[in-house]
Length: 112
Length: 113
Image (tube, rainbow over all chains, first blue to last red; front, side, top):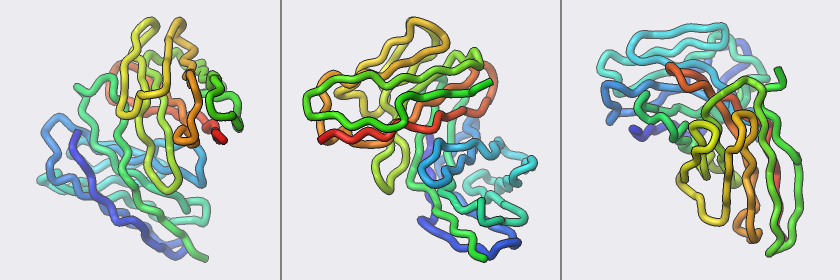
């Protein structure tokens, strides 16, 4: 699976949009981009995933660049409860058994 | 559905002791896996299973054994605990088909003294 690069930490004001970047310049054509988050040592929680089209669900939006070398997770109206470590993971559908490879993630601090 | 359930939540072991961390899921997921997370770091894969009777090693398998006799359960055994195995352990499961999300348990915090 392709490696990802994320900033180690970011701050965001409560109520504002949080934009979390991820670089995955070695991504290949059959690899999806996944986002998970981990709130204060709880088990990781799935947020969203995509292949090449932008995706949106009730939690977030995922914007993938046209060349697929980078993506941005957008939390449209961040709340204090969104303070967490956010992991960007690239995974191939062919990688059937090896579920997920976690990097260091981005620690998002939402401030009042 | 309870999702993925891990027991115990906390455990303290002495060096050399053995124990089993339990993981159960009620979603009929074929894939199950164990990760460990050391302070300030991401999760690392220990072992995984693609179905009952099938297991394989992940990134950091040494010192751990697994078995998968049923779809629901995937226990992780520490044969002879070492201080280096002090960590938080997470179990995860997901379906086989498609591009599906993984569900994680709430973790077992293990301290080996």
